[in-house]
Length: 175
Ligand SMILES: *[C@@H]1O[C@H](CO)[C@@H](O)[C@H](O)[C@H]1NC(C)=O
Ligand SMILES: *[C@@H]1O[C@H](CO)[C@@H](O)[C@H](O)[C@H]1NC(C)=O
Ligand SMILES: *[C@@H]1O[C@H](CO)[C@@H](O)[C@H](O)[C@H]1NC(C)=O
Ligand SMILES: *[C@@H]1O[C@H](CO)[C@@H](O)[C@H](O)[C@H]1NC(C)=O
Image 1 (cartoon, rainbow, N blue to C red):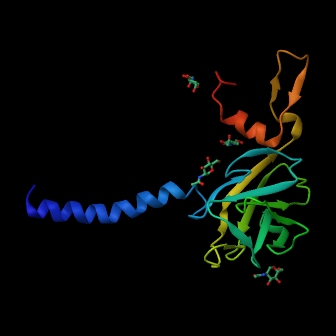
Image 2 (spheres, protein in one colour):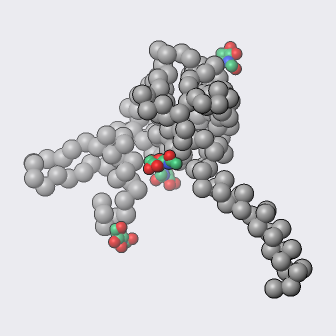
Image 3 (cartoon, rainbow, N blue to C red):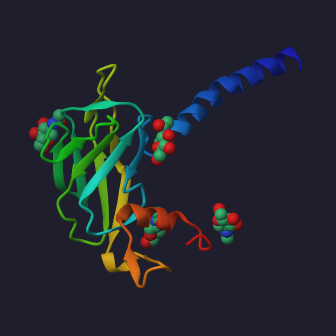
């Protein structure tokens, strides 16, 4: 490899590597602190959903920023991270649950998370949120949620929302 090629490769690596390492942590939320949520982005979920879940990579503390649920650009619910009537942090320090009002339309809902909804527990710094339009999901009538046939017992079991989410990810053979 001649010197010019070396320089070119080094520059390409410098540009590409940081982007790649970010993509590993960013699961679509434009945020390097959020591992996943429930519902996930673009999920189709039963309309009897009662809470949202956000799972961070590192331990957090709840803070002043709001989380907001939108339908057709209307704010349905806006809750501060410190409103412990609606927002709770599991003992693991990374899982946040947000109790929500009933979602009455079987349509698309958006959720935005303001900066400083949570703080990094160790560094005490506010974490960035999820901008409007990034996290969305659709509710569907609960009778359209697939059921799982149980061979041992007679009848069917109704899957929990989590179960449905898992079930929907399986390919046809696995289902
Ligand atoms: C949810 O349903 C829509 C069609 O209504 C589909 O495009 C989308 O891929 C589904 N999402 C998942 C996670 O299966
Ligand atoms: C992200 O969450 C998954 C479970 O959904 C877990 O297996 C994984 O270890 C988490 N990643 C990190 C870096 O904490
Ligand atoms: C959260 O929302 C409330 C109500 O809209 C607002 O008064 C408050 O200033 C917001 N908090 C922050 C930290 O932006
Ligand atoms: C479904 O998943 C199973 C297990 O992961 C795999 O063996 C099989 O080839 C997959 N089938 C299709 C049609 O993708």
